[in-house]
Each structure stands twice: as C-alpha cells, then as structure tokens.
Length: 143
Image 1: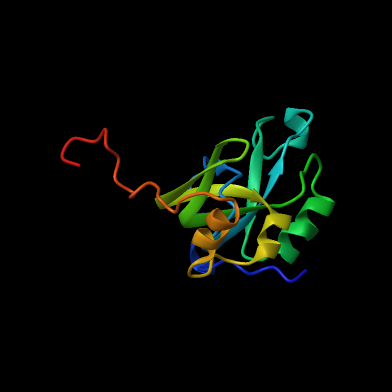
Image 2 (image 1 turned 135 degrees about the vertical axis):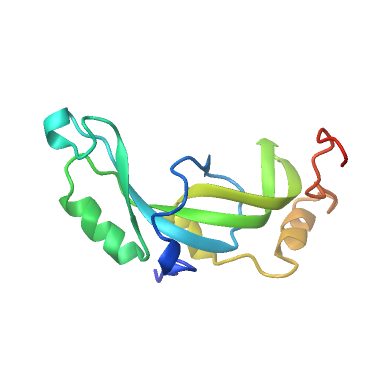
C-alpha cells in the first residue's frame, strides 16, 4: 500500500500533541505520521517516564522508528478533515463540515483522500439524506 507523505513537511512536528481520535470515514490531508512511545521507566524515556511521540513526513520513516524505539506503537497518521461522516451510533450517519484534526490508523488511508461527491454517495448508499452540520456551532454567540 502506497501512503501519502505529509502535505507540508516543514510543519511536521509543529502540530499540537492532542487531536481527535479515529472516525470520520474520509480525510482530506495527511499532516504527519506519529510514533507514540510508552516507556516502562524514566530510564527508558526521553521524557522522564512520560508518553511521547516522534513525528515524520513519511510512513516509511515512522515505521523504521517504531521498529527501533523501545515501547513504540505502530505509526498513526495525523489527518485533517474539512468534511467527514460522524457515526454517533451504529448505522446513524451525519455529514459534518468544518475543520477537524484527528489521529487515524494508517490502514484507513488506503481509501484515499475525500473526492467530490464521495460523502453524498456514501450516505445515499446507506439510505441517509445528505443533510448535516453547516460547520457553524449553534451554541456560539453570533452564529
């Protein structure tokens, strides 16, 4: 499986450590690949025993790091979504719009980035009307 490199290699390692997790079915951009490390002790850690990660522009670099670093997980992809499908409960789908950054399992990238009309087709195939979030938070004053 050929995986895309980060959209902007100069920004790799500059994104916040906290991000959403999983979901969404569609992605727009790969921001970086992360290798999270969970050391057994402070002696094994560059971060005094705390969890930490390394960021890479390519999956190949992240995979090589994961193979060598003690306590490393398999690489994850940090992705950006401008539109995605939220599934609040099994079989319930909502078309969301806005901007979301999330960590994804690398194998989810195999579907490729979101293409025009893909979300609408996904929803239609599941018998769901193509309505959804406009990207405006109704709880925000002035919205």
